Image: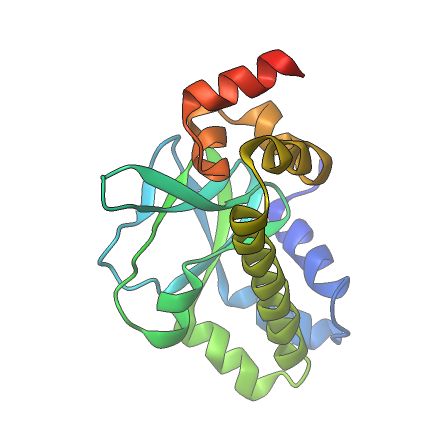
Length: 192
């Protein structure tokens, strides 16, 4: 059984080249955290000063619309990072929540430590760039899907690209991720 420190080490080494001593410095910046199912890790209005790595479990990032309904922006399963990136970068209060959807074994790194690594580990800059590029592409593709696709097309795309969301999350959260009602989701599932 691989432990969470080995998981994040592997994740980092798959993206950048680091010496054993650099990797050791990076890993000392991560702290373990166990989140219970439905626990809110960051509330709207708090400053998002942590980036989380999911060793086991699931995190979701969501916000509330004008009607008070939540819309899920991002879902992170095992071996993925999650953060309220805008707040993490700007230091301003978050417009989003981060919630553990399942009991989750996490590691987190503070914004201060993350930026310190940028100063002392040359390849950490590349890691950050890769992280930002992935987030940008993901967010842009999601926005385009809302503008250019109907609910069925978005559901089919989700089944192709990230079937774990449908398999592991309750219908309420799947509907929130697709930005459709639970009733619409039920009708789509019944037709497929």
